[in-house]
Length: 441
Ligand code: S3P
Image (cartoon, rainbow, N blue to C red; front, side):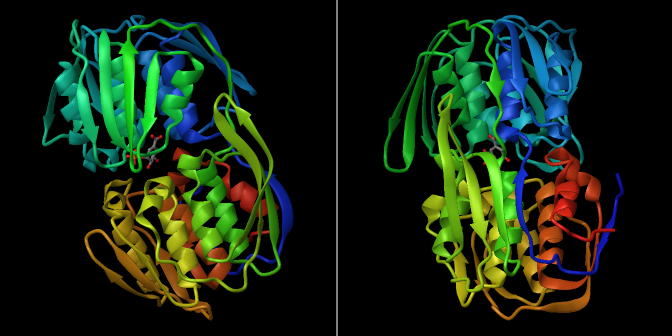
């Protein structure tokens, strides 16, 4: 794949139907849980991307076999105590925060030590958030300032824990649930609401999970240990990848798109609700439920009048991976938009609050930034005609893809570097754009 692309013209209007590759969160969860099932589990439409490949390599290192053909991926799980690996085996999570955080939970009861590594961007990210609860279970962890590489050694007798999770992090919640699954007794988590795919799969597998919903928090309890049989899963399209096409359509005159078969789990659809509040026309068609997950086709029409938004903070975790795109829509809004308590954006593949702010300034949009908020002074007449260069974004796939959508909708002459970053979540991104008529060299 090329490392740099040049975009010198806006995309022309389109009216198309597309499908988007499988959901990344569900693909990684399928792999990790299938590795714990008894027998062969098969996934269809598993995302084929670097983060997902890192998850497959990780279970392989832990002694679990898998087979891939062009339509499916089968994992030969050996139950909750099935991992077999030599002391000081190295697992490289690459760029994947989800894999790196969730794997702690699966390693709660292992006898040998793992050395967990990641790429340059992942090695800058915080692991205290998982180290703290894992140590309470009794896991032995050593790290330099809570950063990768980290040495992890399980305990033969993990203790169930009571934990309050206040960041709204699904990765932390899920690592605790995976550890709890391998721990005798009842683990309780009070957690700020976040994406709930792990809970949905646990319910589908009939693991003894109880969930009580409060206003902002979920109180979750899980009783370990219960083995479970292998299972199959058809992974629906990823809403976070669909989001690039939703915003592309929103910002391109006289255009329409139908995105087929997307996971529209309520904990992920902040982008749809925010854009609707901003006057974007979005309709959901063919809704159905699959293994507890809601799936639909998303229909979007371009919008020639975009309202600004004072974004309710309850949307934050439901929108966590889509804020850069929403900031881009705010650049064209008719007024000032405000986002508060979004400090978690500073802990992603790059500091997305900083990137978003300097990106908006680069395209001539005034902003006001604090450590946890941003105000965006929109300009409905925004048209670009200068030269723009995007680099130094820690190879953050979402920063890269958002820049491409900006280039295709706002005009100007763009050079966008580190395009290979897209391979972590959406290798097919540029090809799908080209089917819509985008000129990308
Ligand atoms: C993810 C959770 C989110 C999200 C990430 C995927 C997951 O991270 O940003 O891309 O699959 O659990 P946090 O849980 O840290 O917010």
